[in-house]
Amino acid sequence: MNTEPPVSAMKGAPFLAMDVGGTHARLAIVQRKANGTIGILDEQQYACADFGSLTDIVADFLSMPGRGPVDDAAIGCAGMRRDDLVISINLPWPVSLSELRNLGIARVAVVNDFVAVAHAVQCMTPDDSVLLSGPTSAMPGPALVIGPGTGLGAAYRIPAGNRTIVLPSEAGQIALAPGNQRELAVLAKMMQSRPYVSTEQITSGPGLLKLYRTLCELDGVPPRQETPAAVADAARAGEAQALEAALMFCDVLGSLLGDLVLVGSATSVYIAGGILPKMRDFVDRSQFRARFANKGVMRTVLDQVPVWLIEHPHKGIIGAAAWYLGRSAE
Image (cartoon, rainbow, N blue to C red; front, side, top):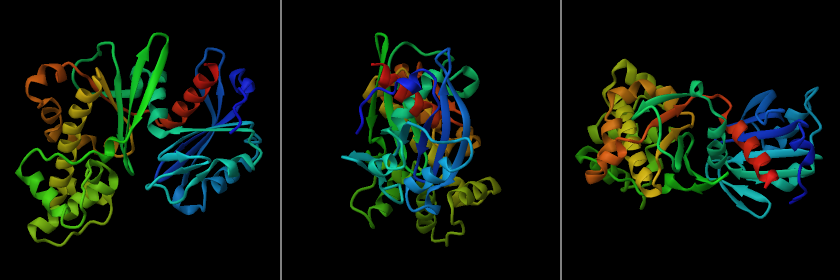
């Protein structure tokens, strides 16, 4: 990989920033403004399944008038990097950095998608988020950034003097920890078809659908919904298993957040991802807040931790760009 400092991008030359998730790839031409913030000049969203590779998506994006060429590209991407490839179980194809450079992009850098979102937090304003629980301000300390989407991504943002250190994680692969008898029954049923059940099997878009189908199986009724969005709609319409799935989703997520706060000594939580903004109405109806704080003697600690839902539409793109420019400045 070309490690030459992207001086032009630091000085305000437009460059490419990408937020690549399991379902959608969001691409934008961005620019560092004089005040250090990041401006989006042009952007477009693609369905990953409609293309044979990220290279094909980038080629299509840059072919439009006024978008290319660019010398720098920053990618926030789900998955693990192995040499010049990024591989993820949630992506329909591996991401090849060498293929992207063959498009004429001199410098291509990639970072975990939730590391990117964690860097975006520092660019957020109060208008970009909604308080779900806890106090309106946080004590100094690490922040947990997490998001249910096609999978479940998470990272810790840790202040270190004048710098910010972001630690990626695979929190979605943590073993599912049931909080009541019904959740135990769900876990037992899921384990009949797989040897290990991760939290992501519930707290993600595909997980919501799996949860709904499992509850239907436990109740002996045929599932009628075929997508996560349909499950949410059916829950609002009063279908018993769909409503239970939506509420259990929120309950399990709340419990997981509390666990991860304790693991990382986080003093604040930011929820991103594409699922919870579409299910925000179920949070108030669920045990989300109670399960978040239900950690025995640590309840008093959890009660002091604010939980925000990030609503900024370009958080992944801005985060990837902020990470890239910050990395270049080191």
